Image (cartoon, rainbow, N blue to C red; front, top):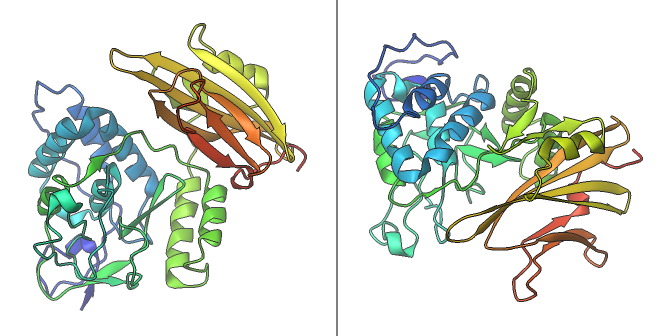
Length: 357
C-alpha cells in the first residue's frame, strides 16, 4: 500500500496524502539558555510534507538557515527540543530534508545499497553509515547508486529539493528523533548558510545533471517545487551580519556602497569571454585565523543588472585575489602567499549571465 510520509509513522492501513496545512503549534517554554530557540521553532513549524507535489523548498531553506548559526551542539539540542515539543513532527516529512541538509555526510561516507547498515558501515572512524531514512520503498524509486547521499533530498544550487512523492510501507516508519540520532554522530554541521540560486538557474543545473528529464516523474516533481519556490519574492539581500549583500543591483556603484566597509572589503573587477564580474572579499580576522567571505556578481545585459552568482567562505587565507586563468577559462581565487593552494576555481561556463546577452 502506498502512503505519503505524512502518515508513514501512523497506522499501516491508513492511506492519505499530507497537505501543507497543519494545526497551530502549542505554546512552548523555550530553554532560557538559548535565546535562538523561538526563531528556530518558528522556522521549523513552517516546514510541511515531503511529498514533492506539495513540498515547499522555501520553508526548508529558512529552517536550515535558522539552525546553521547555532553550530552542531546547540543545533542538535534545539532539534531534539523541537521534536519533543511537536507531536506532529513525524508527520511533516519535510523535516527529514532539514536534517539531511543541515548536516553534510562524512567525507568517507558511502550510501549503503539498502536502508540497513552493517557493523562495518557503522564505524564512525571509517566514515560511518550515512543511510537514507527508513520510511519504506520510495516512489518514484531511488536511483540505484543514490547520486545524492542526502536522498530523498537533493540539494541543487543550494535549494533542497524532494525527489519523492511518497513511500510504500507495510509497517511503521522511522521516527524523526531516531533519524536525528542516527545522523548526529556522523554528520558534519553545514559550514555556511544556504545561498539559493534562482529557479531558472536550478532548472539549468537540473537539465545538465543528466540523471532525469522534465517529462519523467522526478522531473515533474521538481518543476512543481520550483514553481512554488519562485512564486514568492526572494529576500532582497543576503545577510552576512556585518553587511547585507544585494542579490541584484542596477549598478556597480550600488554594490560597492552596500558591501564596502573601510578596512574590511576589497573589490576586484574582471572581464573575460563575455562575462563582466565584480568580486568583493570581506575579511574578518579572529583570534585563531583569518576568515574571508568572497562574493561575486555577474552583469547581465539582458536584464541590465548585476546578479549575485557566488558566495564562498575561505579560512586562513589573507589578501585573496581573483584572477582569470585563460587556459582553464575560469576565475581562480589566489592567496598572496604562493605556498597556499587556490581557494576557488570558478569556471566561467558555470555563470549563467553574459554582459552582452
